[in-house]
Image (cartoon, rainbow, N blue to C red):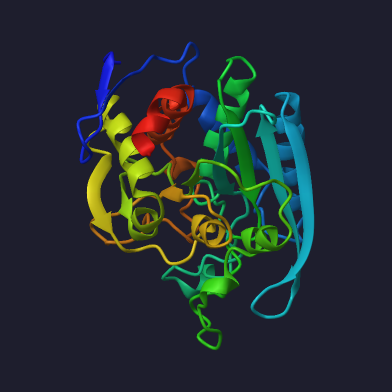
Length: 320
């Protein structure tokens, strides 16, 4: 990694950066995706969902983090009761300088974007959509066990993000608040002080040759911090994957919910398919499986994030 870092699109601020003593492991991250998939669909009210929640709690606890499970009963768009589990873990809970990392760990309860009607009510693996962001956060948590990071990190694994109505059933409106039920619940019953300097969402980040753009909610909420992260990705040699293009394809997501209920600025890494001008082509399909997750994509996002966290004491001045 070059000794000096120059952020693009902002005044010529230069800061000295260092490589982390321990590297982000793409193989470990991929194994965390595989483990989640092995439980089966992580759909609320299913046994596989409960088993994965227990796994996440135990794994995060084994890394020495302070971990809490927030149980919630909420209603979905059909007024069905869903039993949710938000999982919150803290590294360096007493450190005053804090960053929030966010993913959702639940999966879509139908493959509603399948063109084959017979497949639309099947349950996707959610290897990328749900699995990839959660896997990267688990790997970051694992690394904190071995590295002394001068930073407090709050990990939010939200449930109930995929709860909106199926697209094939037009009798229900695709409203913003029918999704992200776990983060909406958390906003009303927060367990931590939302005093983080910045928040980063990881959602659908592990597809083959995945690219990430400046999505419009993030531009509105945390443009400076996002540009710093993108420039760091360029500095690590990932220019063709961290695009400086502004896009508008994301509806609601957990980073929007949390930004609306706190003073924290959140930005998101969400894979963009330029050919479709939308999400990854496998989203909400049976093909969102382990075969279509790339450990190289996990590495690009995870390694950039790990460099960002371990160098945050220098980079935070660029964000301001």
